[in-house]
Every structure is written in structure tokens, then in C-alpha cells.
Length: 150
Image (tube, rainbow, N blue to C red; front, side):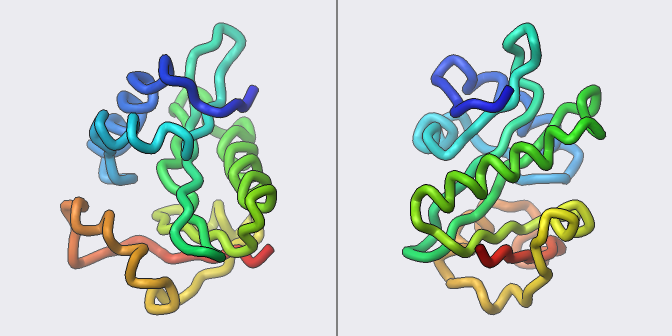
């Protein structure tokens, strides 16, 4: 089941992001950032209400939002949870009247299957790169920028 994140989910979200951050697969987020941006997050919970997947939809500009922090525990991968989380975030973007959604990813094939197209990073506004300053790979970003036009 997918639902908007609740305050009680923060430590699970933090743990999952730290796990994949250690592997260099995404940018981990400090607890303070998660509390500040709780409303950006949605979670996939299993039958026992444990958080096993997460996604965030972050509004970047008047017509642009970012899908970030997409992660599904290894034990639950390959079951369509990641796709469902992305579709949930895209639906939320539409509800907000946002018709362009982008992501920076190491999994371009996954996002291509959902309809995202690879774009040059230069087409994204400079505001998008604020979080990059926190990344250990800055300024040598090796993620692929992808955009979905709705």
C-alpha cells in the first residue's frame, strides 16, 4: 500500500536512504531535512505496516518537480513497487498542476520504461542543483537527467 509519509515513518525513511546512500546509489538525507520536507514523501508499506519503499516529489519551479529519494528494500525489489511509487508521485504532480517531472538517476532504463526521456542536464534550471552541493560526487555528477512531459 502506498500512502503519504507520516512523522512516525521518518526513522525508517532515514535508514533506507542511509543504506542506499552508503552504496552510492542515492543522496542520503539528514534527519533535519526529512522533517523539513516530510510532505514531499510517500511510502510503500507492507502488510505489517513496515516501510519498504519510499519516493519524494519535490517542487523545483512553477512548472517542474523532481522525483527523488526513490528506494525499495532489496527484499522487495522486482515486485513493481518502484514503478508504483513513481506513478504515485507523478499523479501527485498532476494534481498540483505540474506537467514536467524530472529525476537524476543511476537507473535510466527503469525510468525509460515509465516514459521518461534522457535530457541534457543543462535544460534544468540552476535551482535544481542546490542539493548537488551536498553530494560527495560534486561537481563530477555521473547521474543521468531524465524528464517526463505530462
